[in-house]
Length: 547
Image (cartoon, rainbow, N blue to C red; front, side, top):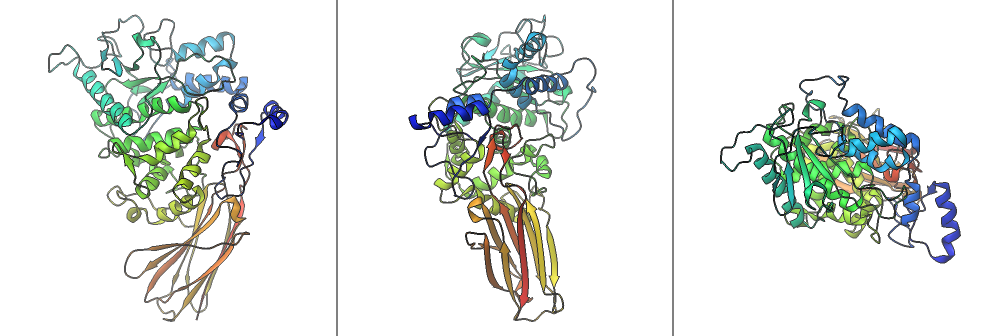
């Protein structure tokens, strides 16, 4: 658990919890896992101790980065398969977060991998080696670094004669647009890095990384003072490919644009909390790239890994299938619904990062807790909006602004039946993991009585554990109607609807396990790196036609 800041009478209990490094959430009774009533934040010492990595985790992080950036021929050369996206930023972040547990040769290898391309002794992710860096191309806020020869050099064409390659000019102007947009929208500027890179501006390096399946990445070489920090904001430097020729899905310029937007958002996130849950980092960065460069639509390729296609996979999953990229659609769903904006970007995601802010004295809520808190400020809950998202994904091409144009996938059904006079009931049940949804559908037979009605009955888990049910009616004419099914404390509820075949095409019931309760810091790939407390909740749905 991320604990609220302790009072003196709780100090002994806090110390015991910190020592155990396994803290059970006590999130209260509100759906979606509300924060404790005692405060917004968590004790920084508790979080720092709980996130202190073990040696095995650090060794695994080192091995992962070494595999991504292998230079011994173990990665195949040549063009990268369409849809491939190597998650270098999160791998490097994990290494940066855990390297303090390494020693000897492993520690030296980790530090080398985190060094900048211009750093002596750096051998890993990108190194200019003996090639002298050209004078960087800078603005008041950032510098683009590059070389003029060797494999990492961009094309040297200089159409405007300013002495800087056109590609570097394009990178600088693109990054400036990205930087200025985030600043106007209210986001914190990436944290300055002292004199590393030559000054305190954020540094972006150009080099050949595309043949490794890497669009770009941001990482941090900020020294860690100890393995249990009390604040979690960090500086970052970034790397972009020198031509994007290995990624044929979009044009090189389009790939540069969306990668700059995505990776620079990671640098911005690190200025809030580099230790935040990886699913939130990737989902909101992928959301941001589409907000800035809406016409590119590169992130549509990840929807097949999202809950649009896999509603039974927890929303806060981070794994090698890439679902965390597809989860941008959840934030698109929310920001199409809650449209208040600042500087051209919806404020909802900014508000989430302000709640997740891990600087000393900031709220420092974990990912789903921050989402839920921000939605509660808007009169709803995380659980309710998860259910609404699940219902919308059943008709995604109509429910999203770009759904039809971009052929968004439709979430699969969990159960379905055509009801007839001889088969008037669909009774189905399932066990849902946390932050997942499931939908059952019935439709009246064409020969069914015109005055048929439908009784919708559900028996879910306790309502205060985030259980929600929505009913979607598809009429013969007009748009679908979505309504909330009222539940008692035990999660039981029912509703009667018109169901005549002349007026009703179908009825769907979407149930959601919106629980946000976890045992935190167990190393699982979910919110607060925790183990969910309400997985495999039994959900029962009975749909009965009658006269």
